[in-house]
Structure formats: structure tokens, C-alpha cells
Length: 533
Figure 1 (cartoon, helix red, strand yellow):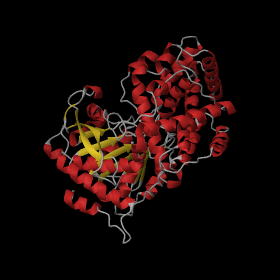
Figure 2: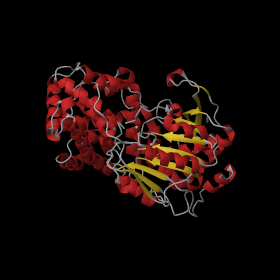
Figure 3: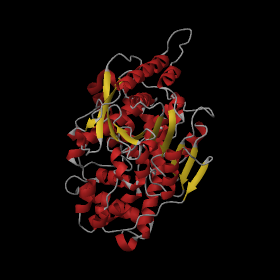
Figure 4: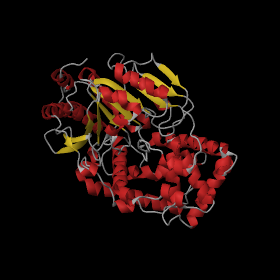
């Protein structure tokens, strides 16, 4: 799932630990049984140790009152007494009265490869104020991310080198170059991680979440996952339904096993074509501001003109067609980027490349984080499920798709191609599913035109998690809508987290207002909570 890669009546802890024990079949213990038992052992251990929160290390750049700590989890849950890794955790304590306190609220923004260490700072924002009064706001870095046993597959400087090409219809020679790069990247992951590589999986992310729950001394978990965070959140709900208190799935991945992850990425690329059309229609509507064309087709021509010019002479020496595409892909995730991107494109075509360079050029100071996030993304998705191993399959499927959805198809394929040559064993995806009554009511949030996680994924998740409620933002496409700029969505989210109340099954919200075209200076000055994309 490309996200250049932006997803807690209590019983006693001992009773929950006992309920998690798997009974081995008569023939002996399976790997699944061993991992289930290992999770129980690790959770017991974490509950006893807790988390010693204190001042955050400087590297996290988190100001007080945010506190940081760590929790140990097994590298391999089938061997819970074997090598351990430490996950970093952040927290802001609930600001309300003791009688209001509802425990810890854990958030994951997706990826795979994204951290939520920053998330406790959201407690200061108006959209989260009442929730932050009731809950300790908790973020963390999943395994492999940031300082949590960090994974790397290549030199960060090589990963962020620029300028790069981004051909919509690549030539045979270009395809051969990218195959060679994918093979080298997969081998780099194996060389750097060694035998640990196979343990970066969505199932282990779900198990880690249960150990984190225990370390926070929560009998049951209150969790919100966005994007990819909804997928391992759904795995958690399937594996540990009795451990769930409240769970929010914001912009849901389609959990149908046959779509994890090859088909999911093809569906995503198709959906991005529609979202790219939404952006172009908005720009055309504001042609008096941007002068990029009065129709979506004219806007597309302006964009292609910029691509062609950048291929000949990169802006600032670092922004080529590849960097241009990456910058505009963000606009397909979040429409609050629309004024900035349209303004930068307009300025570039008039001869002023500074805004485009400022928005699209790689930042050397972010190279480590970018490479690390991509390494974790690749390892998790490649390990999670079988992928086609014949280039002919990739070439056939993506060539056909690029004829109707050229905007994102091949870039998405190149990002995932290392999975064709992956050296670690592949898992079979878990069948996400719960019986009616096995899981407390959960809340699914989805924008109808979301491209990163197409809307059909929310419908499928609602079918599989019996008793879940779905809130749809109609005719909107922002990826990740909880705590955003739709007050109707936020009201449902707050009502659920504070009171456990959901609509019967379905509810709709009108779309949030489209962005206004504003000057680059004003748009750049508007503060926003960072998006993970």
C-alpha cells in the first residue's frame, strides 16, 4: 500500500492473559500456537515491567509535557525468550480530572514505516482537546521505524538522490534498469537485516500492539489506526477481540486476503487517477488565479509541459520529473496541498522555479527518515503475502493499467518491485473476520473518493468486523479524516471515543469545504498537523 506512504469495563489482566493462550493440536505445537503463546508471555512480562516515562531524547524533538519511554518485545514471537527489541513510546498524560480518565489512547498513522511519536502534541489542538482530557495520548514507533530496531536497505543519500526521471510509459531499457535496482534493493535489505528481516510483518505489528497495551497496563485497548494502521488494527481485532475496548479505523485498507498486497497496489493506482482528475478540475475552476488552463485537460497539458522542461533542465539542479510527481502525489492524498502545488506549478511555468524547488526538492536532513520508512514499508509488504515473481506478470498488469491510469501506476510498481525478488519467506495473509458479539462496536471512517485506500476497502472491513459502524465523508478524497477539518466526522469520532456511541451501522457527512486558492505566502504560513503520506 503506497503511502509515501499519513493508521480503549475492564476485565482483569490475568484473565485476558489466560484467554489468549492457544491450545496446541494433538499432533503438537504449530508456529501460530507458538507465536500466540509467545505474545502472552511477552505481554505478561511487559505488564510487570510497565514503561518508565521521562524526558524525551533530543533526537525525538518532542517538547515537554511529552514524555518518552520504551517497551521490549520479542524479535520472534515463536521464541519469546530469544532476542528482544525495544520500541520507543511517547505520551502526554490526560489533562482532565481523575474522574474523567479513560486510560490510554494509542495511535498509528500507517505506512508501513510511519511513526506516531509526534502524536501526543495533537493534545494541544482544538480537535483533540476533549479526547486529550479523557485519555493519555500515546504514540510509538513500530518495529523497524525510527529508533525501534531501525531497518535500512541502502545508503540514505542514494535513496534520496535527485533529480530522477518518472516516465509515464517507460521504455524497455528503463524497465531493465529498474529491475536491476529492485534486485539490488532487496539484497540490500537482506544484507543489512540478516535473519531478522523475516520478522518485520503486519502480524508482528499486531502482536507488538498487544504487548504495548499490556505495558501501558490497559486491560483492553483503545486504538486508532489510519491507512495501513487500519490493516494491522484489523489483524489485532481478529487475533485479540477480547482485548479491544474501542477501535477506530480511519481510511481503511481492504483486508481481503487476495488483495494483500499486489492487487491492493494495482487498485490504488487506478483510484489515484480519479483523485488526480479531482485536483485538475479544481485548478481549472480557479483558472483566474493560476492560469494553468480552464479545463482539466488544459491543466494536464500545463503539468506535462513542466515535466518535459524539468527532464531537460531540473529546477535547482534537484527537481526533475520524479520529484515533481512525488510532490503532486501528495496533493492526491490531501487537498490542503492543492493551493500550494497549483501556485508552484504556475510560478514555475512563468519562470520562477523557487516555490517548486522549495516544495519538491529532497531535503538532506530528512534522508535517513525517508530511507528508513521505505525500508520498513518494503519489508512488511514483501513479508506479508505472496507476490508475483515473474517480471512478465508485473509488466503485463502495469502496462495495461497505465493505459487508463498513467498518473501513478508505474511509480507504484517500481516502489513495490523488490517484492518480486524478496529473499525472505512470505506469509499467507490472515483472514480478517470476527463473529457478531465477539468484538465491541468499532468505528470506521472513510472518504468516498480516497485514492490511497479506496472506499470499497471500508465497505469490506465493515462486512468482516461484525457490529462495526461506518462514517462516510461523501464526495471527498482526503486520506485520513479523523481529527481533520470535517466537524461532522470529528463529532462522530469524539462521541465514540468519549462515550462508546456509534450510529446503528452507517452514517454520512457532507464533504469538508474545498480549499480556497490563496497566495503562496499565506498558504505556507498556515500551521498544520503533519500528514503522513
